[in-house]
Image (cartoon, rainbow, N blue to C red; front, side, top):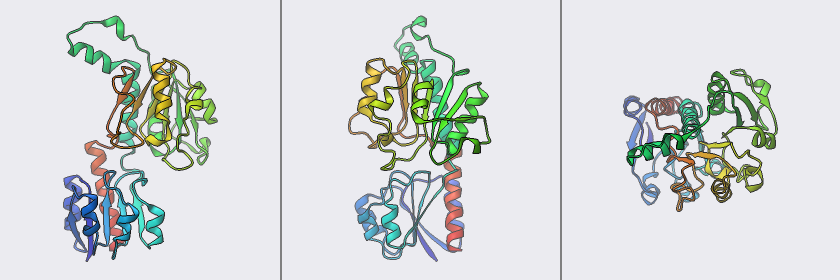
Length: 304
């Protein structure tokens, strides 16, 4: 039997299915600490992680029987993938399972910013009725700029197109003409920044993308434009973004991800033109269920 260590919380249905697979012996430790992991991985053939657990070089050095790391989710930046590979350990993920959930959060942030829903709610809960203070804008008819044209971006682009938005996209690895779900015009990153009313980021955090949206790039945005980031926090320079938001050079931002999670300090705290979330893009009942069942399928097939 293959011994599987589940290091982060998973939905009940997928866990029940995993327990029922005869060739898997499952240990469920959703609260395991980094220190405990050094011992917990001993004798294990597979480990399942979400975003909480960091698979560091130290953890990998503690492996003795490990064959595969399964990441329930899209990004694998919490795993030292190359180092694991050098030790003969594969890394697999579930790139499609949570795409719709993340795209819907990005769209929700667009609506929240456009209609100033958060400050209006705060005002009402404080007992104030100030209708004229929260004049917003429509999302339909605006330009949606997608930085990255992967699965999540395509879900969002399809929704934007259905609302009557014009969609433009930048991706050095995907041709815009290969996107068949909706019409999208391929342009450069600078054109995305300068022409879009809503810019949504859909890129991994790598050496190539680190702070790709720096002060110079962010400053190209229209003062009426909004930035949405439900991908990875490290692709933007938060000090530059906070300065531009404070000075009114950018209309607003919706941020679900941060370079360090949880952030040690939050430069956006108290800003009325910012919508914040604690990396909850995939946190839907449907998304969690799909992620879990795909993890189970990967383990079943790998060790069958």
